[in-house]
Image (cartoon, rainbow, N blue to C red; front, side):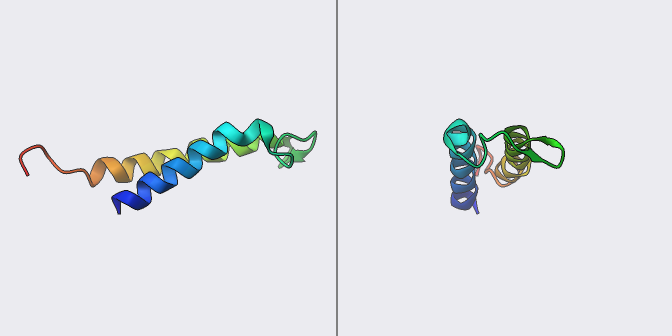
Length: 64
């Protein structure tokens, strides 16, 4: 599970960093009534929370 979480964090990070370079995200269009880049960033930021929670809850204690 941990390698999957790290891979997901990598994909999310790349998505956040590449947002200004992606043409379909950085376009003058509206998604759900908001600018597309705002929706893109919001979704990725919301996806970070469960992935980090999964990493936190599956980490081993120092004694184990």
